[in-house]
Length: 131
Image 1 (cartoon, rainbow, N blue to C red):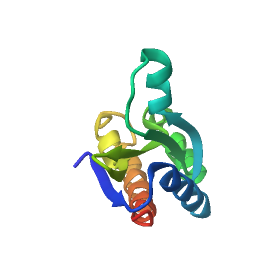
Image 2: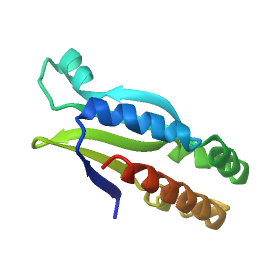
Image 3: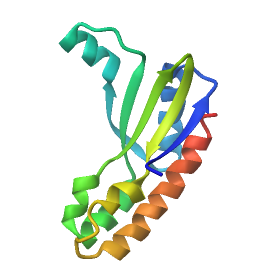
Image 4: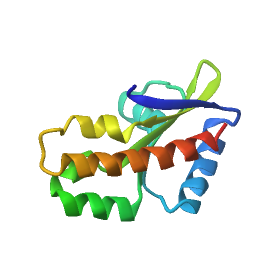
């Protein structure tokens, strides 16, 4: 499965605030916040549902991955989308193991896959905190 998605009882903005705090409490950082609704309104003059993409990173895991193979940076950082969908808020993780699977030919893949699984497990636990 490409994603790990849970429904939250919070609205998108509140879910992003809580998710950001929970990430930081668990040694993850938010590198960027992409407000898709705002970008689409500015660039295309269209209305869209609330949709926020967070680029998240655990510095220790990133360092370990880049130390194995610098091409690991091609799949960093991890992505979590928080969005409104038919009146419900969804929190959706792009599974790191899926992201890495596109790079199965790079050296150190097995070690990187273990790191991706570690990241995925940690991020799923954090996503579960948002319900």
